[in-house]
Image 1 (cartoon, rainbow, N blue to C red):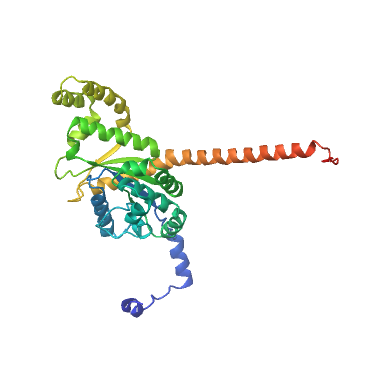
Image 2 (cartoon, rainbow, N blue to C red):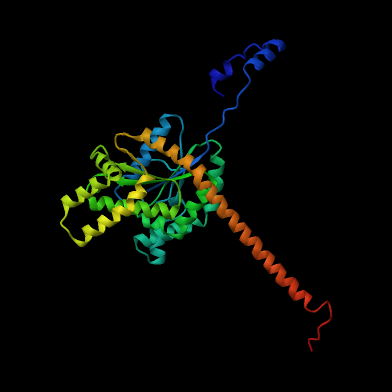
Length: 329
């Protein structure tokens, strides 16, 4: 026990009458602990996803709200933060490549599959920590298609979404997206991930200390501004015409998309990032959680109907003989 606490004397207790009066005037209030939030960090290699996660980790530590960090990238050589759960402690990526004669991507995919078989144990640990932690940060491989489109990635995402509010943070390399074609490719990828995960989605334009994200916000808000940038960069080609058509499709997508500019190096925009996360959590409760509950209820109803049909078939088979003996000779 801390010496200062041990040496502290108990406060003098009030008389019963004065104590009752004080409680009546100021009834005790129970402060409700904020609900845990899962943040799945997704981004292409080199986008600064892991560095941004470290900045978020440091930001929360400064506010005495230390997060619980889970690393799901088996191929990362070194992490700038200490992970509470690390896939590398469970699966040896290089050994998997050697044992199954796989390449780098195949090794990452197989490692995730092996880790997913232990997901129930991971969730038990996470549920225990959920009593004292608010934010749970999940770092994913830079080869985002391996996580977003694999069976193991879907299992992990759906399991997290069923436990607590879950938000997907898609990290974009802002300097590399200054070209309209690259920007369009990134937004198409964001759109596909959103509809694949079906979870609250947030785009974080990273590296704003190098290139400001104002151009991206303008292109998302003003369809004609993007058309002008596209026309200024390329001649009338098939790809140019295709991008003109695709940006029409994404125009509706932009209206429902949360975006924020951040810098993993300087910490710029991190408070805004967490404000957007709070908005996404509210959306999870309003729209996504009811949809998940409806899907779960539909699955339970289908299972009950299947069991009832099997029982009906069994009773029909038993009733065909009317309880009489059947000669099998």
